Image (cartoon, rainbow, N blue to C red; front, side, top):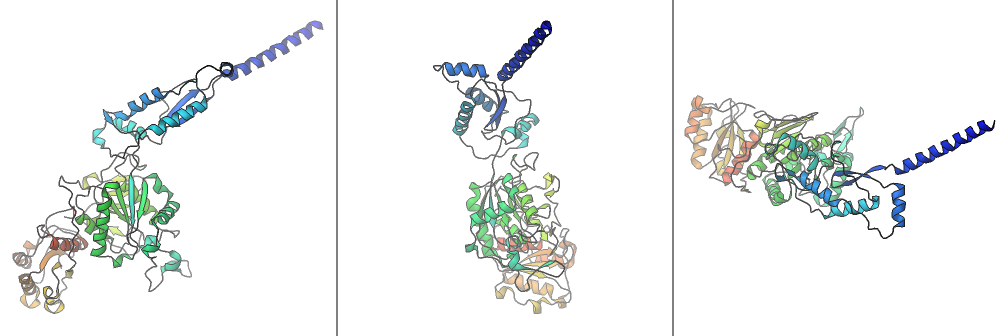
Length: 508
């Protein structure tokens, strides 16, 4: 019996010793924790209880400094990819799991203060673009983790359906369909009543994804129905973009759909060689409406505008976009090559004579061969347009001498003559077209031929009437959209040293 009690006591003592040893072992085990410093994870072992107690007794011991030197060496190694310095901006994505681990026996509060102090001491560097051709595959992959450019994008709000007040502009019928209130065309607040800060706040509230792509600023030069826009507003926009060119990496223009193709054509010609993305977009329904296409168009547009920056979450590698574009309905198109082809569907724009620059679906599928490559010419903006221009379609049986008369005498300086097919027109004298053209050309009227077909090239020399017109000094060339042809006529009337048939911004 006594032997059993002794055995029992021995076992209890052994159990208590084992539990005590486990407690000691647990105390000695370092709890691993992570701290974030300029994009780099540091895994640090905390001191054991015994070591901490020993340090508390030894008050004269000097505190251990954070491993700043080690962190600095790793930072410098990361920023030198292929011998080039990519700057201290690191990706917001954590390092891969197999990255080196820094271990140090320091207090947690010391590490926090030291790392924060070191991070704040690093100077900011302006955002840069990376050319994938300059980086190897391994360097490019590492750059995705180490380099975080922060593109700045200026959103210029000009009006259009996207910013309408749905309650004031639309009515709902008995089946739940919404329609514009008749006779209004939509309600647009005065631009003076719109504050950029409030508009930016509303945009971030409605489309918070925008902040994932860029640091956004807003300017509101005017707020109007796009049908009221013309050369005055186009020049105003061009001057605004030129003024802000050096301060922003890309530009996003919210615009009404009716004249968006005209505005895109005008900006592309006036700002030829701008070398930064200018993307126009809008919507068929206001942003505040439940089924609006505005949200997706804004996300698609800013995704394309920031395509040259590796921090773009939609990009596998940078894409150099350096032209004026329209992004609408899941497509990115060259601005001076597209037209509004449908009045109500979400995919309202088409590029009938030029391939799309990108298709936006689950991924952004770029057509690299279609992108405009900026020439080596010096950027030279031109801000003059002559608005004394008309589009003149040829209608069978119509005598232009009666229908149009003396256009030049009434102040018209140029016309875009919309001919049949590849450049044909009525060639009999009694039909009036050739005699009328001859008279107007002698007075100084500038004439450019444009086909009534939506696609295909012009060859007016194949027909008698076309050959006669060319001999009169009528200009012709590759097919342009009617919208772009009119704008280019306005442009070339002011800059007479530039022929209508000379390509300026990828319009031909």
